[in-house]
Amino acid sequence: MIVVVGGTGRLGGRVVSDLVERGETVRVVARHAPVGGPGGGPGAFVAADVREPDTLEQALDGATVVVSAVHGMDPASGESPAVVDRDGNRNLISAARRAGARIVLVSVVGADRDHPMELFRMKSDAERFLRNGPMDWTVVRASAFAETWADVIRSTTNRKGVPKVFGRGQNPINFVTVDDVAAAVTRAAADPDLRGEVIEVGGPDNLTMEQFARLVTGQPAVGHIPRAALRVMGIALAPFRPGPARLIRTALVQDGVDLTFDPRGSRARHPWLPCTPVGAVLGSSPMPELQ
Image 1 (spheres, rainbow, N blue to C red):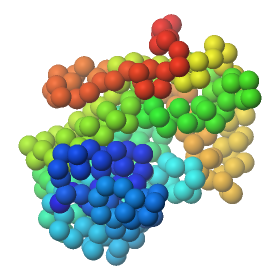
Image 2 (image 1 turned 90 degrees about the vertical axis):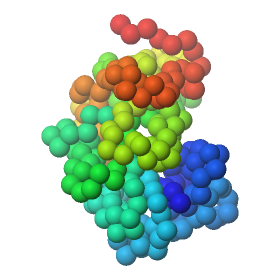
Image 3 (image 1 turned 120 degrees about the horizontal axis):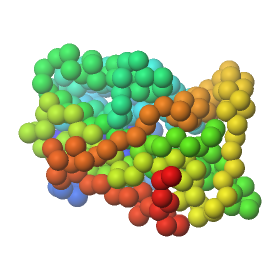
């Protein structure tokens, strides 16, 4: 049985559906039941929380594979990467090993203990913890989820349809579709021959936020929230809206660090990896050319 933890989220839900289509027996684990209740989607549902180790033993009972699709970057959750992506994953990895299960950890391309983004540091810590044990793991690293950032862009769009981007919006970023990441995670969960592998999945295009915003909205005009304003907002919101404040601080760093990715090397090692242009999923206008 394959247990997908975080199985009601955008990525986890897709992984669950893909695994069920393959004929796998799947258990969905999350803090809250999926929309429509425990029977509202594929797979049996069990409530558990990676922040609470005592809830994990029953949730993972009988598991042969455990997929960690959790993350602490949801602005609405009030959680943090330190609590979920580092500490929560440590709890989950330990519980999965006690259950004798193989582990698939979803991480990020560029995860590093010295990265300026908290999420990347916490994912790196989880990877190190995972590797400090038996060779019972596969890591799937993904670049930025196109659908998630499209939601952010749409949330900043005014009544005239003009979106705003955080900062200068000139830094190229690799975006990947959730379906492509789900395909990699599903393959890793179903194929034990991939144990010990780090699989990196990204899209074929590195786009600036300006280009991405035009792609999402179809509008040639793009507004900007100045970096100075972002710094103030990230500090001012932190005490009472930590989730949005964290997202703002992340966007500020994202505006300047190298977040490009070339998927050709990963696809040469794993030819089955999809590489879908984000414009095929989100586009309302032709794919913009990089300047």
